[in-house]
Length: 223
Image (cartoon, rainbow, N blue to C red; front, side):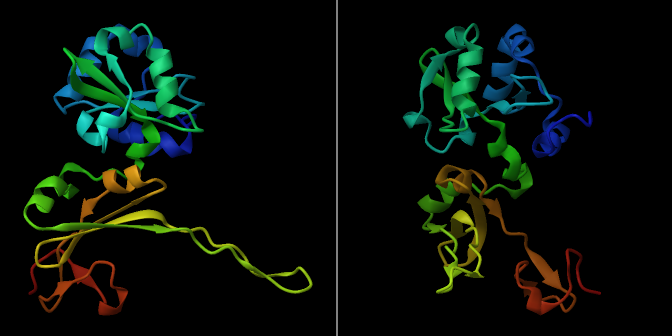
């Protein structure tokens, strides 16, 4: 993998492949959109070159929490104006997913590639819609962090602490926590929801993978 890739995108390039330029993506546009539409290919796009700028990604519509609220581009119209589509999706001031439609039906989406950084793999995903239909629950919270404390003489007693942003906690119909996600925005928290791994301790008892008080745990059956 080229060392000149921005550090923030190196893991994504390893996972999804080297980014395409705007021109390369435009030349293979049919393949790019169909790959995302079928859920088999995610294409990264580096509009300013792979070494700089914000990358975009062409992804399945399922990676967008509420596509109905996003701008829609006919696939044929988006191709010659791909630079504009990518810029709108990656604008650092207000990045907004751009929906690609075929015959007026959502086919794929262009999003800021940074949204993919915390995306769970296929084996870690939870079907949140089905879980809600079966009586589960998603609890959304926001952690603004701590503003810090200054003394009477102006000295900093406690420095500001950044918060965790938005978090989404998923529980099943019995109230058992089975998934969790977080992100700088509400949409990212929902997209990053992943299944909590089921693990056992050496004595065969279930262990909360975030509970460090229970000691070592393993994925293997107890011996």
